[in-house]
Length: 175
Image 1: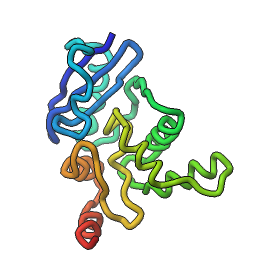
Image 2 (image 1 turned 60 degrees about the horizontal axis):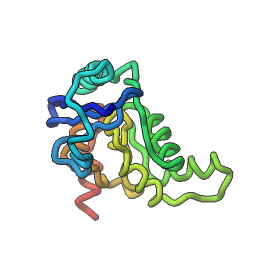
Image 3 (image 1 turned 90 degrees about the vertical axis):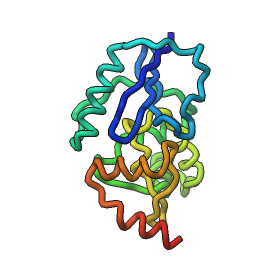
């Protein structure tokens, strides 16, 4: 069974979806992939994972790093899963680039290089935003890059973590 509910964050309404194994989605209302699934596939219902996710989000939007992870049930290709696991290792309040993630994957596989664009594609298909922190990834040139929830949300999330986004915004305007 698939379930859904919403969460009102300071950055806007968030849709949460889950199955019996864990959280399957977290999207800002109006974002790129918001509402991609037919409503008939999800039942409006409160579940323990939603309560745990709300608690995590309350801490996060309160400006603190949560010290636990809600139970998540990620679904994707092996490459996407590899990228998403690396996203989880980006420290709270820090950023990295698609290229750095690609280098880490290449090193782990014992190959010379990995495409940063392929990493970007996997990052862009992360269904569990914020908790799987795709908002912490920036362009190689130091510019802010796309975010499925909207650039204003990306900036807000980075600000929540104490990241000074001024330099990223200035760099983005130069380009």
